[in-house]
Length: 143
Image 1 (spheres, one colour):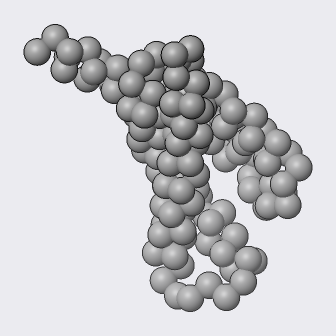
Image 2 (cartoon, rainbow, N blue to C red; image 1 turned 45 degrees about the horizontal axis):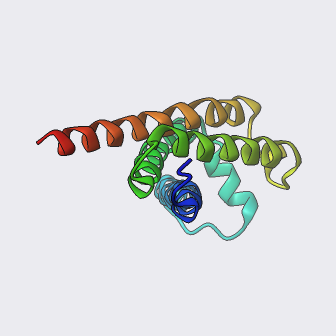
């Protein structure tokens, strides 16, 4: 974290988590509605489409993309110690996933393998996104 600017650190961590949340929710909604090819009228219909194997694979792939972008954004907001900030955001997000996937009301409606897949891919993808941003910053500083 940045001892010289703790507010920037807080914004970087929360900003990365917000980017992940918004992107993953929007991409899920688009993917499920596209796969449904009809209006979804209730949660049961939504989850029936969401729990199709192909849709679930797409959700895991979209989670990776969202996490890469979230890690990149967290690092960009931090401007320094990129991996630390993205790592804190990823750690907090993992805790939230564990809590939501074990006690949330939708948890029983999501297959166990998908819950674990989301947990296992998110943090590494966020760190990769932060590494990309850190390397870009170093390259910018040397030119």
